[in-house]
Structure formats: structure tokens, C-alpha cells
Image (spheres, helix red, strand yellow):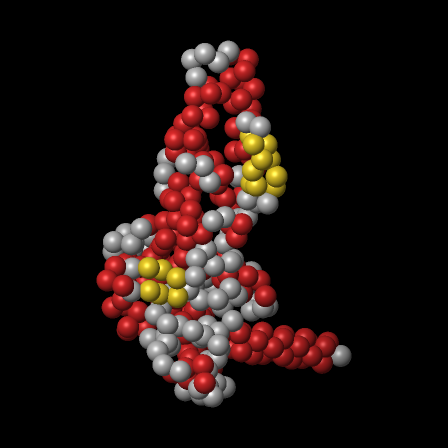
Length: 285
């Protein structure tokens, strides 16, 4: 938080998404990613960030930009607002890695939990499906929001029932176990959900996906054939690992912990590169 003074009052100006009031995040995302960039949307962003009521903000603007205010004073006041705009540019560039809210509240009493930061308990199959949905939506390979809804339904799920924390195989995830067919059916419930909530989940996924990809050396960025469809390498790895039985059959591979799978893929890649280098040295000798 950055302390600022505005009209003689002290305020705390957030400098990252995690410092914002979670209740205001959907509205702010709506303004940042959906609303046209107008003076009105800019003023509304500042108002929400500072936590001011609409009447208080209008009164403040009337005081500093009303008809009785001189030209020089208005220019000085406009400079203050421009500085605030610059200080809030992070909203357009910074990924969301912390949960924007703990759960989604849907119609008919449905509550879906978000995954934890870092996707620590997520399965490889869950992330693979979510990543495919993410790529299809951001590239608009299928027009509309169908794949955005699929992404949200894949990673946001109801809490497990019963005394699941006492089960010997509990992995720390409070959400129901992932089932791709159940998720596809649940996605239909998201048609009327506030777009800002969906966007918050999307950005949370994107921020953590970026973190996951940066954490492991999986061969990204090297020259190679482009993928023929979104997530091809992730899907292909599921089948290759299942063929070798590293984590079991295909269903067991999909259910394996994401990070366990990625650590194996990273170490296996290192072994392959070391073997290639060893052979080169032998051939050169």
C-alpha cells in the first residue's frame, strides 16, 4: 500500500491485486478489461480503489472541477488525477497470483472453491484440461465464452463432503476431486455469472500458470514443430507417461499431482540432454 493525500485526506493506494478489497475486484476487472477507456471509467476505477461512495466522489469532483473552479486550479487537479492513473497502471499488466476471492457464489446456493495459490494440490489432468480451455478462449478458436465457462468450472468446484481430511489419501485439496464430465455439466451454470468474477478466475489461473511454467525447465522456447492443437504437448505427455507406467495407467497419470509429474518431466529432459551430449563427445573422440 502506498500512502497518499487527496483533498487533505489520507488514503492507502493499493499497489497489487492482493491489496484490494476482494468485493471490489470483479467491478474493477470489468472496468479494466471490458469497459471502454473513458474519463468516466477512469474515475470509477479510482473511486473503487479508494473505497469512496459515489456521492462522496461526485462531491469531491464538483469541489475541484465545478464551474466555480478556476482554469489553473482545474489543471493542477487534473494533474493529481493523472498521477493516480499512472500509479494504477499495474492493474493492466500485473497477473493475479493470489486468490481474488476464496469462492464463487452462484445461484441456487452453489458455492465453488478456487484452487490454492501455486496449484500445489492440482492434478496433472485438471491443469491440462484447464490450460486447453484457457488457450482456446484467449485465442477465440471457438467464438464466445463457452471455453471460459469450462475453465472456471474445471478449477472451481464445491467443497468435499464428509470427514475427508481424516482420509489417509487426502492431498490437502478442499475441493471435490476433478471429473472432466462433471465440470462440463457444471459449466452450464455459469451463463449468468457476473463477467468480472469469471475474469478474476481467468487472471488468477493465468498468473499461476505463468508461475508454474517458469518453475520447471520443460523445453519451452526451443526450436521445434508448432503444436497442431492447444495443449498438444501436455496431452501427449499424459499418454507417453501412461505408456511407460511412470505414474500408472492414463487415468492414474491424469490424477497424479501436477508438480510430481512436472518434476519427472524436467529431470527426464535433463537426462536426455545429458545423454545426447555424452554421445556427441564420444563421436568427436
